[in-house]
Image (cartoon, rainbow, N blue to C red; front, side, top):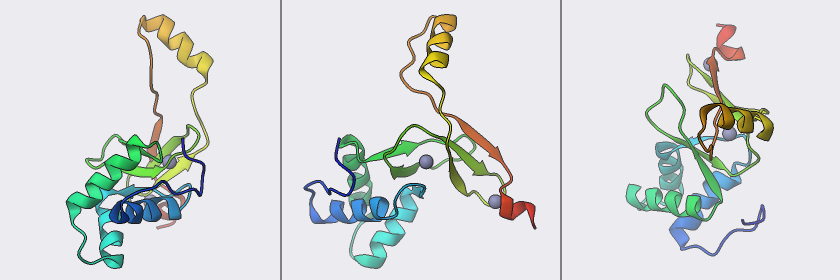
Amino acid sequence: MIAPGEPPRLPKNYKLVYDIICGAGHGAHFTMSDVFAQAKRRRPNIGFTTVYRGIQRLRLLGCIDEIDLPGTDSSVYELKSEPHAHFRCERCGKVEDVPFALSARTIGTLAARTGATIDAAAVTLSGTCRSCQAC
Ligand SMILES: [Zn+2]
Ligand SMILES: [Zn+2]
């Protein structure tokens, strides 16, 4: 685990991907195309594959998390943080962090009930965000 604000030693292009995602801080969520668009703005010659590999590398290093949200076909990436839930607006597609996580006790109860071992849990809420409600 890398301390926040301490960039890992990375090839230049991967460092750029790191700066984009980690520079945005907690609460920001990027699709692969978002990261690519920003990377291209800073380094026009960068290829999609490089950005893709950079993201995979940063995931393996534990710097960023990949989130698969129901109802979307592209994963989003964010700076690694404490477990939290996500809210996705069905109108504008905006993704927001929600400070909620299933407790270890709840997960334990569910594991006992199903007889499974549970390694991961993700909570996604969906609906209409505040600004879309005003439209
Ligand atoms: Zn919305
Ligand atoms: Zn998040």
